[in-house]
Length: 532
Image 1 (cartoon, one colour):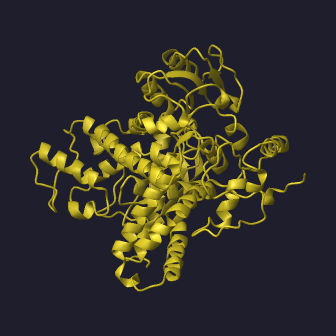
Image 2 (image 1 turned 135 degrees about the vertical axis):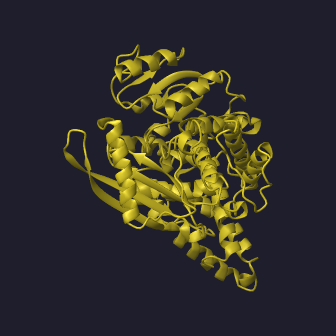
Image 3 (image 1 turned 60 degrees about the vertical axis):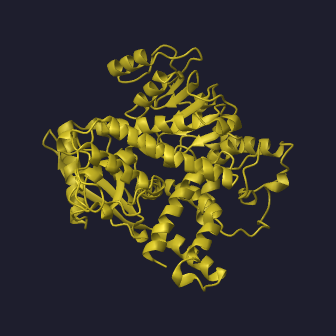
């Protein structure tokens, strides 16, 4: 039976149990094997997946460019991110339309006109506001000059936000497209967490291990200088995040990513209804996990999971992997890596690249390193009931649908990676003490106002009602930050659960999380009457 890639289309309806969706792959044998598996399924019938066109007209359909990202294993990170985003638009579109028709200037408009306007807004929001590509010379410690390349993308400013919040990545393999995708993800993560800021992301294309601390400092300083030359201007509502506490930063900021991921995992694992769907008992105690990456994020996260009662049975690094069903002594492994620079040759470690470890027995599979780490021909054999995106973009759209189609829970990056985002926003609030609190928190979730009120009361400052307050001073209890992150993640998690139930999304927490972000952005657009 001859089947072209074009004949296999994406089912936009609810994920079906035992269903597979096809993704192009460089390995023809692997692709043929996946197609063979699809053809041999007893249910659902293949006719549900094979068609030259869909027969059902949806209120909104994913644009063709992003639909292609579902089929292509080599699709760009930007297109894959947008596939996830526009899948959520499919579900939330009717609500966006009904809310628009409540706006004064649209109360007398037809539903067709409202549909056209929503589609128009989506097209505007699809575009990055800017993407800057800079190259500049830096003097190395040996006196030689070297050209460094950097990027910075901004997204979401069209929704009326005055500032951007995003990160900076230093890695030799980053691309312009990758920065665009991360900026989009930042916009909707900020909105999902109730933060009234657009998204942004920057990158410096080097391997940091090849540079001394002094060289890295010069590179980052020159990178910032180049951005200012290109149009980035300092202003009263501009501040950097992730600084040391001596310079107005939050203590232990670098640990907030792993702490946030732990809170995200605990939230879902302690929910009996979700655990019943995936077939696990509640709680972290006794759960086995495999983790990809033992870097600044993965190493502390693995340790936090073990401290919570979980058992590490597998570790995947770039140059080696280790699986032991009896459990791995992380303390010994960390000491070995610190001494040797790698886990190669440690105990039962296998020193070569192999993704098959992701299919080993475990309860939780954690990705804490690279994007596009799990592709379809591996995802279909994953045994873990819970998959955690502790890093940005480790699952392809096809892998995501395979897992959720099998009633596995994917804790998505838009939610699981938000610990550092919330910490950065709290640091930003601290640095913006000169601004009026009412302006600072406009369109932010009420929980942030509650945090500020708590801090104000602790220091006997004026209430946060338009006055100037001392926010997150260096004397604040560090626990306030972690407790605030947990509170915000719990608040967002409960909204995700509500949307899963209301829209019958099964275990598709990613679509629910994106829906929260979309709704918050459109609320700001409607209120300000921006681009409508």
